[in-house]
Structures are given as C-alpha cells and as structure tokens.
Length: 137
Image 1 (cartoon, rainbow, N blue to C red):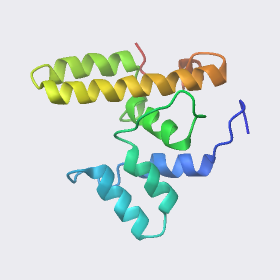
Image 2 (cartoon, rainbow, N blue to C red; image 1 turned 90 degrees about the horizontal axis):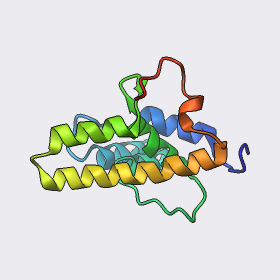
Image 3 (cartoon, one colour; image 1 turned 180 degrees about the horizontal axis):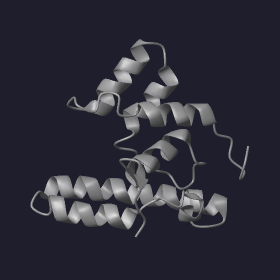
Image 4 (cartoon, rainbow, N blue to C red; image 1 turned 90 degrees about the vertical axis):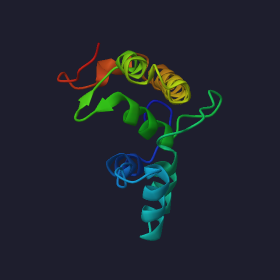
C-alpha cells in the first residue's frame, strides 16, 4: 500500500493490457468483458466493462478501474498525452456531432476527477511520474 491506497497492481496491469481485447467490435467494452469473464477472469472483466464509461465519486478511494480508465484517456498508442490534448482532439473531431461530443467531454471530465485523485495521493502532478518520452502539452 503506497500513497495510502491499497490497489491490486497485478489487476491494474492485467486490465490495462486487456481492456481493448475486443476493440474492433461494436460495444467493445461489453464484448471484451464478456470474453474475459467467459475464460475465468471476472475481476479483469469488471474493469474492462467500465473502461469507456465510468462515473467517479470523489468521496470513494481511488480504484483499479479508475486507474485503467484514466490510462485509457491519457495514452495514445505508446505515448502519454495530456487531457488538454484529448479535449482539443474531441473538439476537432466531434464538433459536428453534439451527442458524441458531449459523451466524450463527460468521459474526459471523469478522467480529470481521477487525475485529481491520483495527484492528491502523489502530492505532485501525474506528469512528473511519466516517462520522459511522453508527449504532453
């Protein structure tokens, strides 16, 4: 338990690596979760199911699902990106699709809440612990 939070590191890593296992399918979070549950990974499945949409409670301790959700929003390919960069991309790509724009912005707002939780625990910006090769603006 580092920084005052008890998290299952192996669960976070497993879910992070497998969260897009069904990426090419419609509703890939649900499909991936069903696949993983079906082969005996129920805890990973629970996280994969919510990696696209998660409602964050600032009153609840940081969870494994929240870390995977945040990583999903802050990683593009193999590089870290800022939430500000993600917001800019959403504005560029979805400006003509109001429902999709609002859904994406809500996800990024939830990610910002999680980022705040992480930074409170770290006592410093999350960017300070990311690799030097990260793309952050």
